[in-house]
Image (cartoon, rainbow, N blue to C red; front, side, top):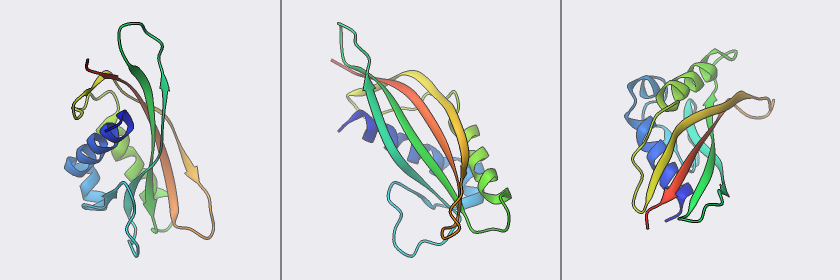
Length: 135
């Protein structure tokens, strides 16, 4: 397992258990969106990490982009889903699968519209945390 996968799994579990998120998308929170999925739903997009140089262990800054997808009229529904994601994750410590451990609470760095006339409306939420590997 990698720190990205540990974080993705923890974020998905958190969002699927959050009543504010599930009230908007049900159980439709994905790492990979199944074919024929109908909005609204949430999926986890790109993940990235950067090594933090320290002498005593392995520590990374890990970033994820989470998408809120909607087909409702206007932007209200996708921004409402994005806000539920923010409230579920911002400043939270999530349990990660061994051997990984969060060193810093999740921070929401950015959110924004994705405008593509050929696709359902979407809003992204960027999160960041620091993850270490237990020795």
